[in-house]
Figure 1 (cartoon, helix red, strand yellow):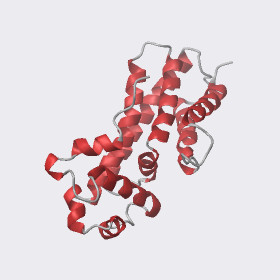
Figure 2 (tube, rainbow, N blue to C red):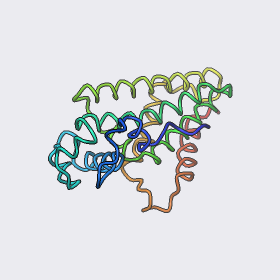
Figure 3 (tube, rainbow, N blue to C red):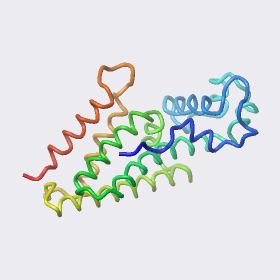
Length: 212
């Protein structure tokens, strides 16, 4: 499977005009990383620009040197998570392997995106649609789920997966399990490696869905 879309650091740099890079103290990617952590700890709506500036030890003017608004930070972080997931799905759909094999690649890739971009995916899974940026992210998630459900339905028609579970329900159950990883997986604080996590999640999914 090809490497998912660029990291959050690269995403931030691409979105930044050259004149806005290199502010003394923090670069744009560092501000983004700290902001996402704060959004996850306190909630996006509850985190004011003043609180973010105080956490960084910057003035509001210095913060606005890097980003035009708090919402722009949110948008970049959400897009980074979604770009990774969509890249995994697009790569799988472009393949010519059996449908179940492509579905497996999506599951494996989604877990890897989550472990590689845990703060951004955590933020994505906690948005409520309170702004245009959040609603756009939720719509992209909805379309992603629909496309995965189509893969599940295809694998069922081909006799590779059990067909007594509705594709939309199977998709929700799969990603309910995957998404729950944000609540307990902490890189550096567990002996479980990302590769082991991918293997375990994939085994649980396909042992439960495999046609007998």
